[in-house]
Image: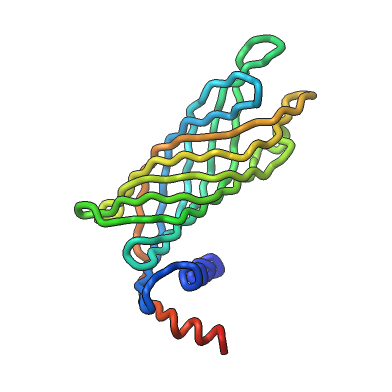
Length: 205
């Protein structure tokens, strides 16, 4: 937790074009999503399946219009993949954990905030016997609204870079993508003002 937060502070200090004194606000949150997932082997037909994600997230607001949001999620996903040899559809199931990091742009809208974010993610498959590569990486985009009482709604899309799937004695390249609708709740941990000039001076000394 402390290392993660410190990393976000460094990113906020070095890479964001904000004023010399900037208000930082740190939030913790929980969220649950219903997801439509498609694990699509190249040159093979597939149909999306219903799944879900559940997890927590941290959000560091840097000033009024920018934030970094990290998510740690458990994902359950399904997809129906056609067997080219038999012509039948096989149910594909995935269970794994994912870590997302979004760069978020946000603006006040009504009593809350509208936001959009984009960034990378990495996942680790827990169904070890079914996968050649446990690790998978990709990118995602998220769009949503935060109410003043802390309730959040969002829609997200993510697409993984092609990986390898082991099906029996066959090895096929597979593309993973998912669209999700979510509901969450966040609460503030603390906030303070960051003096970038002092931090830069401390690193230069």
